[in-house]
Image (cartoon, rainbow, N blue to C red; front, top):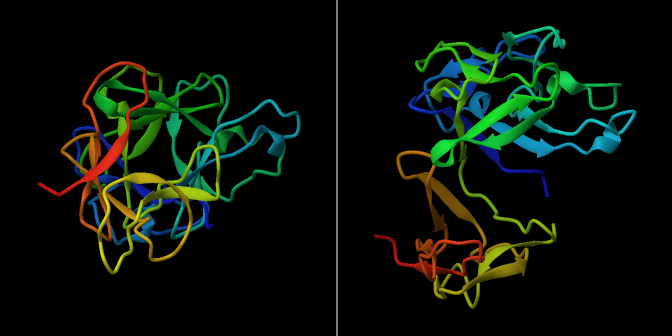
Length: 239
């Protein structure tokens, strides 16, 4: 495969998205821009980076890699004494000692949104310094404000891979793209043209409708119950 799917990162209560707005490279600022799904400067690949890549094995976190620049989201000059800062881009320093300025972790926020925290310094979080195109993206002390909450919007058709087996992806039993039939979903070995790609559409917030690209049917739970038991999934006709 080619790594994780690309996503747009959308601040809560805003229509603009996190972007390499100038489509620049090392040192270019990260800010908000009007959403344009086809714009590769607005697309980010988020991958967990193992602690083994860091010299003493103590640091973890995920990397945000911009599709256009192939640069990582970076907290320039990160230091423990800082209480706020900026987000820019720089070459991924994964093989250098303590590249903590480029590693980010996630925590749940209300209503399905996510808080994105730096592993450096005082665990500062991403903070949209406005909600309109041109607003800066910085890092600030966590307050729980809506400006510090984000959702992830996958771009185009994506695979929904297994968390435990990288060779398997979500598909539709008995389905062929030419037929578009079947309603039982399951994890399958990846086979091109076999109803294994999906589109993800926001329902107006951090909730999503997941649609099978071949059949047009939507992913649903077999029973809308609460609790810790895993839900079984099936496909239903759209609408």
